[in-house]
Image 1 (cartoon, rainbow, N blue to C red):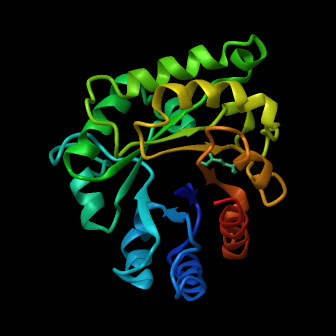
Image 2: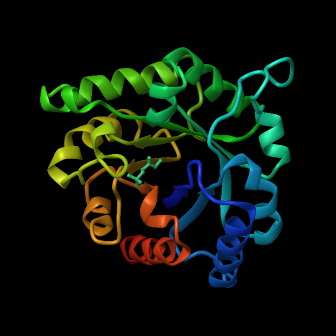
Length: 247
Ligand code: 13P
């Protein structure tokens, strides 16, 4: 199964989220393309709205962009995994580089969040990625394997885990598109270690309608995690079609 999804990051009002979800529900009224598992990770404010519009029998899984490891308590500004589930999430995105860089996310907190997600029956979407300097120095594989091992430390059953490799140098408007040869080494290593153990290993970072096909052809890539190119529903639907042709 190819997992193809988008995080909207800190974008979309409720009206914009509703419009996207309404169009997505209409486009997928006959189900998801064969072999493709779609997912959307809206801002937390829009989760219940998107869930309600898609409906409970939708093929689209929903995620939250971050969740705390505690079930409840005095953690001002945080959202727990049970609360995320209550709002309609079945996935928890954990350890995106933007959270590691700007919100002090560490391997330790990532690991706690992975465990909390699994405890409550949600799928962790564990993000990993190396800075450009590490890539330039040829250290990508070591960096990524250490990051993923730390995130999964003490997790005996990783079968519900998704891993998203998102090189920091490839993400966002200042990122550069990765060429297949840039990411083959990391995917070979991830595939060898986790390919037959986890649910899926995805690629993210400047994925678009022009490079999605060649990215999916890299050995070990079983999904796409997309930002900007899927923030308009037509762009996302096109990516689902491209993935379906590869599935
Ligand atoms: P872009 O596709 O906008 O580069 O973002 C990727 C990403 O960070 C997905 O989580």
